[in-house]
Length: 363
Image (cartoon, rainbow, N blue to C red; front, top):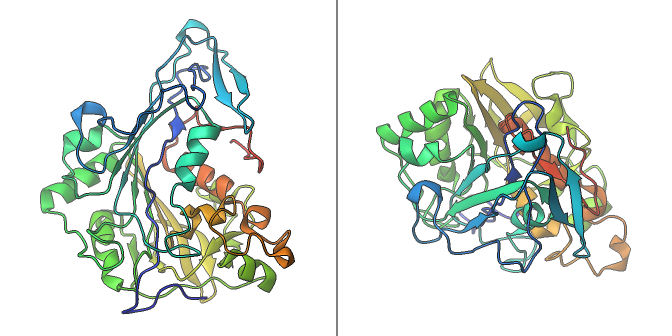
């Protein structure tokens, strides 16, 4: 089931744009903003990042705050849904800012036919609160001013081309600024395995070195627990979760399986917390508290493909023998992403996911 091997073409996906509908709650304040309906003109695909950041490959989604009495989301049929706000006149959740850094991958269940907008679409249509996310597909300088704009940074394929590189290098000032940002309360989610070239992990390892977490250059395979699922999902099943460690137990809350296909194993220092493993055992999900911040490393990028969320882009979707065994039937990808986002930034207490065909349990 390998999509990539050493020296071969890569398989991967960076998240092209992520719109995280999050907010920071103040006191007993619940959400108090309005998310406009699709087609209302609230979402712009050509804006500049907060703080004046801009440039090629930047996509900004910004939803204007409205009076705090209630907030509106939209269900799958386009019907506005109201979410009560209990904080009175002070019930305003400021925008929660996310930067996705890295090039898009070139492979999915079918090359160039498995969209990389799944996470973005899910959050834009199913999240309550304000949403603002910037995607940087080109190399961006990690300065203190740039980093201060964001609450969460998702590290995708840090490269000029996720398939073949070259893979980026950061200077000492950038590494120091990134560490200081995390220790001051920033949240990081890193993904890997976009390429068959093991050196793809070098820039991510460079940025995460201060945490002691690093990626290996191996191939990591989850065990297939049901051949029908693996065949229809085009991925093996990550199913071994560590639920006894209270620090990271919520990362697998209400999650049984997600797809993992040829990832890279993770080295966890003694003071880190292993949340998931595959046979070996090898670490597939590792979290660590660093100062006031949270670092979370995941072993793959398969969870970002549309084929793993809705079935779009999955060549097996029309296969009658796959009925009931497709990713959208057996994986809990939306819940897993909710858990990772919520864990990586505990201040995101306004983060809600509503009106989902596959319900997400908010904690």
